[in-house]
Length: 171
Image (cartoon, rainbow, N blue to C red; front, top):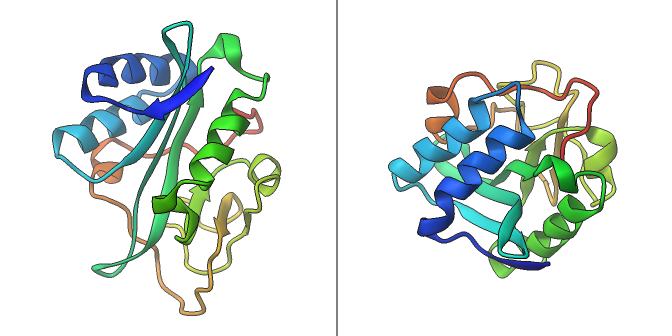
């Protein structure tokens, strides 16, 4: 398996992967298609095995008002036949070591037990607009003490409503 930056020609393969990894949700693929269509800054990598993209991870800006205050990790996905084999964990560890990621505060709306293994902790502040009680909202390197609702790129709202984890871990 090798990890590389997502190229424009591989975008359709990632959209297909997201639809496989999240079969009950069109949100993730639609989100990514909208981000790409609108030329938004996305830090993204894929895991490739035998010339097939088997995992994907993305980071987009997090906002405090109009100012960038960190990055959102979303989505992280692994094709079903490679789930539960450490592929998502390896891709996440790789991404966390990258220069554009390693010094930023990071936020994720996800399964707490999974993300805690990578140093993410429950996030009291800022407030996540998609998780009323911040029960599934975690952060890494977050020194925020101000009470505000963290902002997302507009495409997060255009793509429908993001789904919160429902007990089943998806990676």
